[in-house]
Length: 103
Image (cartoon, rainbow, N blue to C red):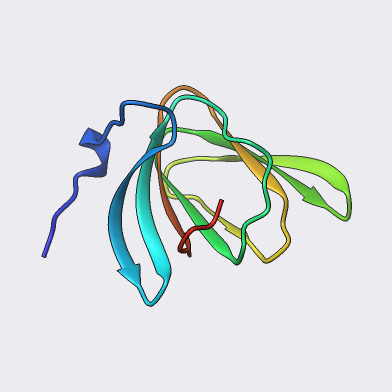
């Protein structure tokens, strides 16, 4: 058993993470960041939950770049093959659920 207060979590670098669980190769990690990530496509599906802050999520849909603002409590689901990149607006804490070892 473990209780994690996500609002209190910080890391020593952007996108630093706290591993929460690994369930049959699916990881759940808490990330802290104040910097954009990089454009990427995950090895599988990804669930991205904003726990604190605001994140602008850029993604490509049929080759066209789009974006949406994600606020606390919002969830972004990236299906297999979805190219995307997260840009926090200030500090953000996000819960990411994805295949172990994914980008």
